[in-house]
Image (cartoon, rainbow, N blue to C red; front, top):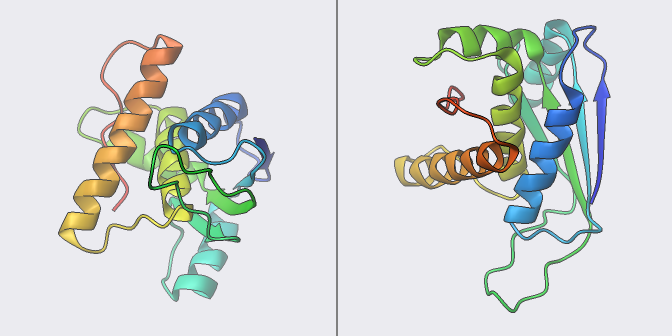
Length: 165
């Protein structure tokens, strides 16, 4: 798995955990090990520009995903996963920090960025949360991936509750 994490935000973030949780999520979703992903961490101003340009919505957001080859997880267990360029995930630590603080269980900016990374990966794989059934599926999968990764890493305490909408 080729995953690049590029921090352009000016904020110190745990790039290693972003890389690690992205790798875990892609493996869990059975994405081909030679696929490529880019994660870019930007400041609120840059995120606001992207949010306005691509979603026509004002203000910065937490995460945006830009799919490239529209890869999808294999449907059958014996199906070979496709290989390609997954796309880009853009994260905003300023928004992540606020969301982490406002979450019911309260968690760190880095924990929120880990959650948002998984959220971004799922969007790149075609998952969405516009409809209630889609939201239940995506957020359930997101929680399972984050919980699995945290358990594998030996983290204790509650997992971050989903704060993305």
